[in-house]
Amino acid sequence: MVRSDIKERLEAYRRRKRREEMIESIKNVIKTVLPWNGNKPAEDSSVAAPLKSDIKDDQDAESTCSDDSVDQSQCTMLRMVIYLLYFLLWVTLYIIAIQYEFGAVYFILSTLIFICLNTRSKPKKSGELSAYSVFNPNCKAIEGTLDASQFEREIRYGIGNIH
Image 1 (cartoon, helix red, strand yellow):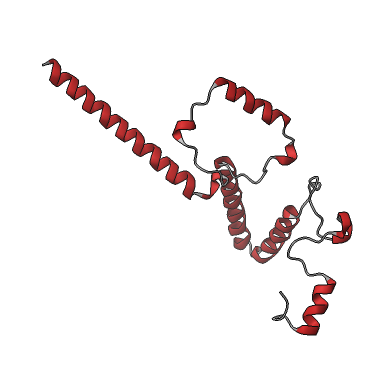
Image 2 (cartoon, one colour):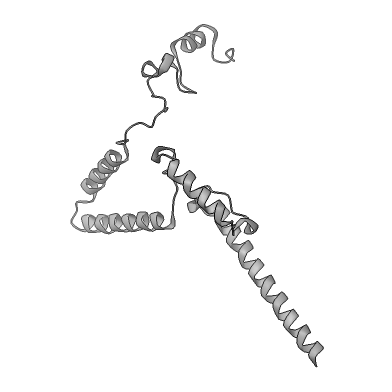
């Protein structure tokens, strides 16, 4: 009787562990597939419980980091929901504008507002190169830009001959 009770408890424990492992693997797959994970790799479950000294070191490292070094483009679930709500509000107002035969004007105005809001308004980060090479140290150009000497070589010798 005691042996069968132990075997049943052991089997229940193993089933629970298998279920937890399946849930963790599904969570990891979802984290790596969906775009709002901020391109962060999935954390290993063995690293999930760091020591208290590691937590203190991480807090010290975070406090010494500047705000500029933090990647601001991380998408969170909240940000995705907010964008979805903005889009739904825009669609609702667009439908109302269409009903009042004002749809084209609303679309053009909202497009112009979208362009204005998405142009850069933040100051340049330290060490970031300017799009205009004359403002960079030693007039260094951004990778992939066309400079005058390269343009001249392409005109003289053709595009295929330039390496």
